[in-house]
Image 1: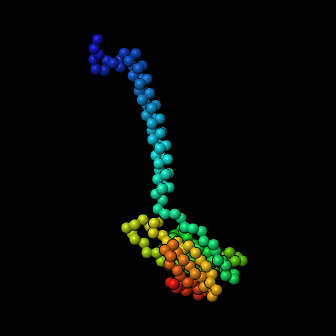
Image 2: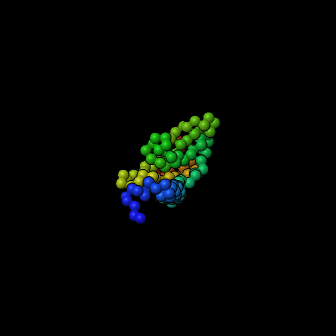
Length: 155
C-alpha cells in the first residue's frame, strides 16, 4: 500500500519512529556540536600558544648605584609610552619613589607588520667601573648610560 505525501506522519507508529529519529538526530547533533566546540577551544588554545608572535622579554636584574635602584621597564606601552622596551627607571632606595625614567633607544615600527613582533627589549644592564651603565638590547646593540646626567651614547 503506497502512502501519499504527508500521510506518513499521520500514522501514529510512523510519527513515533519519526520523533525518535528526529530526537536522536538532534541529540547526536548536540553532541557533535559540543565535540566541535571543545575541539575548537583546544585548537584555539594550541594555535594561540604556537602562534604567539614572540617570547616575552627575559627578566633583567636591577642595578644599584648608591641610593638608586635602576630597573628595566619592559612594558612601557602599559604606562602609555610609545614603545615596549628601551626604557630604564630609577627609584629611590629608601622611599621607593621613581626619580627618573629614561628612553635608552627608539624602536622604529613598520606599520605594515604586527607591532608586537617588532618590540626590542633590553637584555642586560651592567654597572661599569666608571659609574656608567652598559645596556644591551636583543639586537646586540650596546649603549652607555650616564645615570647622573642621563646621557645615552651608542657604543
